[in-house]
Amino acid sequence: MSGLLCYCRAGFEPELAAELGERAAAAGHAGYAVTDRDSGYVRFLVPGGDAHALSRALPWRDLVFARQKLQLLADLPALDPKDRIAPIIAALQSASVAGPPAAAGQAPYGTLLVEHPDSDAAGPLSGLARAFGNALRPALRKAGLLAASDDPRRPRLHVCLLAGDHLLLACSDSRDSSPWPNGVPRLRLHRDAPSRSALKLEEAFMSMLDDAERARLLKPGMHAADLGAAPGGWTWVLLREGLQVMAIDNGPLREHVMDTGRVTHLREDGFRWQPPRPLDWMVCDMVEQPRRVASRMATWFREGWCRQAVFNLKLPMKKRWLETTLCLDLFAREAGRPLTVRARQLYHDREEITVIAMPSGS
Image 1 (cartoon, rainbow, N blue to C red):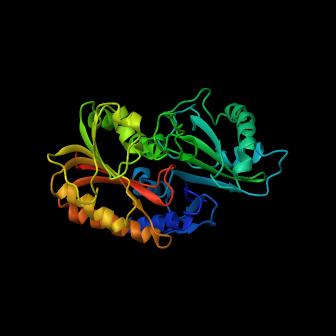
Image 2: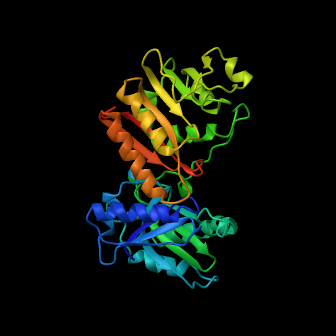
Image 3: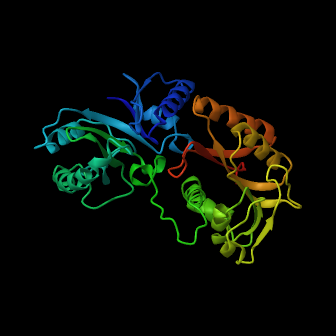
């Protein structure tokens, strides 16, 4: 089996399949997507093709609807529940590994992750995944397929359980994949957070900026605007990063957010308000038509009102990949300046995607 295995939010398999197909074709790779609605994953197969080259052509950071990108190794159906390990070892001994080749005598994989898709059907497999991982890990080490202790420099081995007798084997390069199991950062809602929407901005900063970017672009004392701020979830996250915030909303903010002394609440329309001076950040989670949001966000960059921004695009029920491409193209065209733009459907997003934009080269 040659191709990719990508995890996604259940129900968004058609969008991920369309994205993979379009991006692969643009990069010159012929293939096709295989998936089921609400399964939480998509396989993109390239029969006779080069899965390594396909993976390089589709960097994980550039994918919108993929929580995780893996290189497929094998599909193992109809397994004997009494012995799943022997077929796995046999398949791995003949598989091609993603990432740099192992040195002589070195195990090809540095870490094992036993996972299952994030779907209602696969949810009951979580207990089996934990138990099976504990049994499989020493067997792989004995066979010389897994490092004696976790080695993040080596490719990761992923076992994706689809059922008790069916699994997929895949691997990932730690430099080109999500660092979290299932591609999901586990965040806990802080008791002081004004709303659950705070998790979206926290995840955006965690997963869409690397450590160096966060240290450089999110500094205490910076100034930001939060458009459509009430009840204050995104403002609260900005405050925790040490920023000064202008919260723009006709609705009220939670009292403890205002008590920080670093928030100026302006009861105005977030779509019409403009800052009196350029800001470091603008964030926006307003419920509006996605193209209207994209156009307004572009205005902020074209007019020089902000240097960086995070905003959400609420997607329609149909043709969501098409709407995504239209909105991102519109934003890039109307912004009128070179930008680095990253877009992703985060774990804490629902019928939406999150976009982060910053000056090119920043």
